Amino acid sequence: MKNDTWGRVKEQLLEAVGRSNFANWIEPLEMVEIEEGVAVFTVPTSFMANWVSRNFSDVIVKHLVAAGVPATRLDFKVVANRRANGAVPAGNQPKGDAMSATPAPAAEVNVETKPEELPGAPLDARFTFDNFVVGKPNELAHAAARRVAEGGPVTFNPLFLYGGVGLGKTHLMHAIAHEIRERSPELRVLYLSAEQFMYRFVQALRDRQMIDFKQIFRSVDVLMVDDVQFIAGKDSTQEEFFHTFNALVDQNKQIIISADRAPGEIKDLEDRIKSRLQCGLVVDLHPTDYELRLGILQTKAEAYRAQYPDLQFADGVLEFLAHRITTNVRVLEGALMRLFAFASLVDREITLELTQECLADILKASDRKVTVEEIQRKVAEHYSIRLSDIIGPKRVRSIARPRQVAMYLSKQLTSRSLPEIGRRFGGRDHTTVMHGVRRIEDLQIQDSQLADDIELLRHALDA
Image 1 (cartoon, one colour):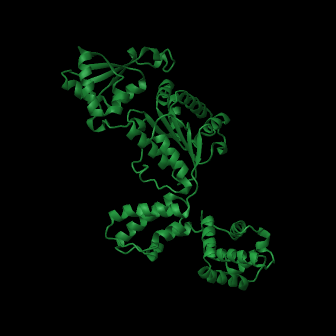
Image 2 (cartoon, rainbow, N blue to C red):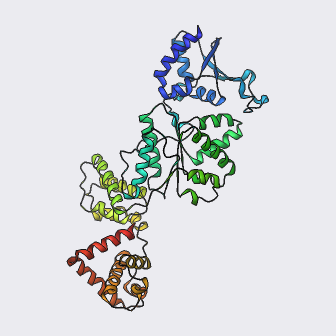
Image 3 (tube, rainbow, N blue to C red):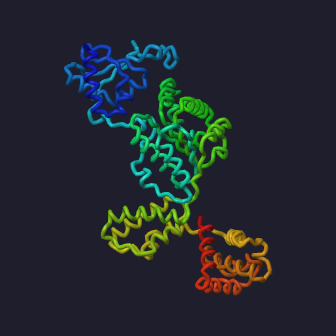
C-alpha cells in the first residue's frame, strides 16, 4: 500500500520540484515504511540523504500528509554496500545506517535548485549566446562553443578555451551551459571553477565521502571546469581530476575546460593532464581589437538607452572609448555603465567632455603603453624595410617616408617629447621630428593610401 501511495506522491513532487530536481533527487528514493510519524526511505548515498534532507524534506512531508500519510519527519537508510566500499568507517556510521531528517523551516526550503549548480557554481543569466558580441578575435571560440552547445555526437572533447582576463571565456562557458539546459533539460550539466572542484575534493576526503564525490562528478553528462590552471601544483587534486576526466571521456560525456593560457604553458600541471587537454579542440580568445570593442559598446549602449531614454548621447563617444580603453572587456563595460549612471544623476548630455570628466581615472590607467621602439618595429614590418634603416641616416624616399610615419605615430601614441623622439631616431633634432609630423598630417589629406596605412598601423599597435 505504501508503494502505491508513494507513487502518487511522486507524481505530485514532479510538478512541485521540476523535472531535473525530480530525476536527480526524488526518483532514486524508495519508501520502506511509515512508523510513528516517521517516513523511512532508502537512498544510494549519504550525500543524497543529506541533500534531500536539507532541501526537500518539507515538500515531501507536505505531499505525504496531503495523500493521507501521517508523516512528521523523514529518515534515510543508506544502501548496505557503502561500508563494504570503505566510504564510511563502521564506527562512524549511525545505528542502523539511518539518517534522520527533521523538516527545515519553510523559508529555508529550496525546491528550485538546479542540478548544474550542485555542487558547483550558479550560472549568470546575462551570459548567453544572444548577448555575446562576436568579432575576429573570438569568432572561432564562439563557433566551437556553439557547436558543443547544440549537442549531438561529441566531436570536440575536451573543448579547451583559453585567453587573458576579460576576453569572454567565462561568458562562453555560461552560454554553453544555458544552451544545453534549454535544448536538453534532461542532461546533467555541472559547471564549477577548478578551485571549487579542489574544495569539494578536499571536503570529501575530510568527511570520508569519496564514493559520493566520485558518483556525482562521474555521473554528469557535461562537466565544465573554469580556470583549470588553479589545480596546477595540487598533486592529489590533479590525480582525481585526471581520473574523473578519463571516466567521462570513456563514457563519451562532454568536457569543457577554460584557462588563462594554453595547456602546454600551464606551469606545474602534470604532463599526462596537459596531454589529455590537448587531445581535443584548443581555442585561443585573442585580445580585443578596435572593431570588437566598438561592437561591444554599441550593444551595451542600446540596452542602457532603454533604461535612460531621456539621456542625450553625442556622436563619437563610443569610438573614443573603444580607442582609449584597450585593457579588457570588463573595464570597458564598467566604464560605459558608470558613464550612463553619472550622466543620469547630474542630468547632462553624454559628451566627450563629460566622458573625460567622469572616467578620468579609468582613462589614465588605460593610457597607451606603446613605445617608440614598438612603433618603429611595426612601421618597418609594414613597409618591408629594415629597422636599422628607420633610425639610420638614409634619406631616400622609400625610407624617409616610413621614418616620418613612425615619427608621426610616436608623437600621437606616446607621451614622449619631440627631443626624446628625435633621440630614438638616431639622435635627430626635434625640428626634424616636427617637420616629419607636419608632413604626414598634410599628406594624409591628399593621399588616401597613406591614410589607410596609418589607420592599419594604429590598429596593429592598439591591439
